[in-house]
Image: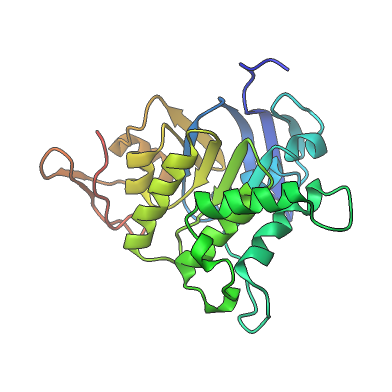
Length: 264
């Protein structure tokens, strides 16, 4: 297989849910090694796009290639996925390492976990810096710690692509900063697609940006302009400058309240 092949290629993708058009004529090439940030309003189709890439939602029309594979089942083997919300029964007696190694289920050729599975488990726990939590019960962890467990579960299958859907939505700002630094480190080896409402983090950490609101809007680099926000959210906003690295977008009906460290 050619090494210069795109990680993901999406051509003329249309997706409808319950009779409503959610994604319209989406064309997107995600190159190997990219760190793509996808922003957009609630209901704009961001989560639907990730689930369609995973084969969980069948498109009305269009095609998706994952690492050159048209067959979604073959392509999905290259992907690790961290969902928007993961519900845990806090009283269920399962440890961190037991949750993480579940990510190896699709790689097993025998009933028991192999030495290779155990090695991948150790590597994943080390990468996300939760090896010290491996024996803890999942219900004892904080929201931020549980998110790291989910990333480790995605990494244990040794994916080439990592999809994350709002991974910091229910965590505090301190965790978010550390988490984005972790993704930046992982991006040295893995292509990352991150869906987020955190525009400031998107601008600071990603290599490229896509804006999705049924239609897909793209521009070069990681610049987030007032014009792009206006087009994406379909409402007027003002950009106020305070110093070289500080920008505030004027609130509009609660759509965008506060943004700092956006590179313009």
